[in-house]
Length: 86
Length: 161
Image (cartoon, rainbow over all chains, first blue to last red; front, top):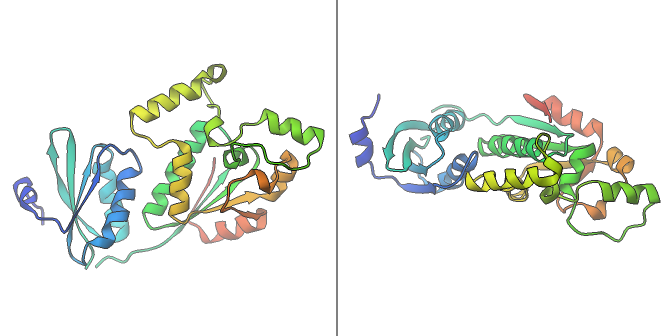
C-alpha cells in the first residue's frame, strides 16, 4: 500500500532523527542510532539533506527488515518515514 | 516480518592515499550501519592511516627511521592518489569534504570503532615497514594473512583497496 504525501505529512513519528548536514553514510548511521528508541511496529522519521538518502534509507530498511513508507520534500531538506519491524 | 540477516564484509586496506582510505571507511561504516560485521585488514601503505600523530620512543634501525620519516604519520597527513599537487591536493579535498559535510578520516575511524568494526594490523607488513605497535592507535588487533582469510571465508564481500 502506498501512502500519499499528505498522509505522510500527518504522521506522528515515535522518534525523529535529524541527520541534516551529514553526508553518506551519515543518514543511515543516524537511523541505526535512532531505531532502538522506536517500539516494534512504531514510526521513525529521518530528516536528511543528502539526496542519496532517498535510495539509501529504503535499502537500509530492506536489509534491516523495516518498512520504508516514503518521503516528503521540505524546503532544503527531506523527511523520510519508516515503520520498524514488528 | 522480513528476516534480518547479518552478513560479513571484509576490506583489505593496502593503499594509504586519502581518497582510497575515504572510500574504505565509507563502505565499512555503511556496512556496519546496515547491521553487518565488518573486518578491516590494514597492510603496507594502509598501516600509515593508523599511526599516531606523534613520535613514539621506540628503538629503530636507521632504515626503519628513514621509512618512518618518509611515510605519512596518521589519517591527517595522507596524500591524494590524484591531484596531490605537492601536498596542496589533500587540503583542497579536505576543504571540499568539509563543505559537503563529509566527516574527516579521523572521525570516520572513531565511528568505525564505535560501531565495533574490527581493525586488524598486518604484523608482517609492520615488520617490513619498520612500524611498531607503540606507533599505532589503540584498539587494534594484530594478525596475519590466515586471520584475514579466516574472516574472508565467512564474508560475502571482500574488497581490496
